[in-house]
Length: 155
Image (cartoon, rainbow, N blue to C red; front, side):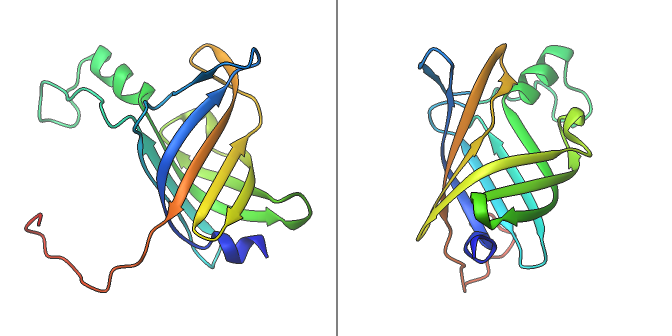
């Protein structure tokens, strides 16, 4: 079953936007950073971002300039909620409870899912992003669970 194959922690490999004219763009850069988690109880969380986003001048989380905040939001997406699968169409439906993009809260985001061993590819329906309608294709790699807990020293 698709749901059983999705359960786990996934590390982002790539994000490509496929535009109607056949060209591609990279909405989160050529080397994006991200994590996706699905649990057995139907909960999910995802974060992805451009690895090369510019830091704010201030170290205060609430004190970025309007431009800094705009750039940070444009370079990242994060949301959480629940999920269900449609086995007959290999689709995963994300029921969004919270998102940095407020317009997605309360919506269902559908993703075509292909799972082959430790590789997951999710594809969106066409959606507006950066002034273009594009199909976004996200490739993920299953992370191995570590049996060595780390401390808070940052090592």
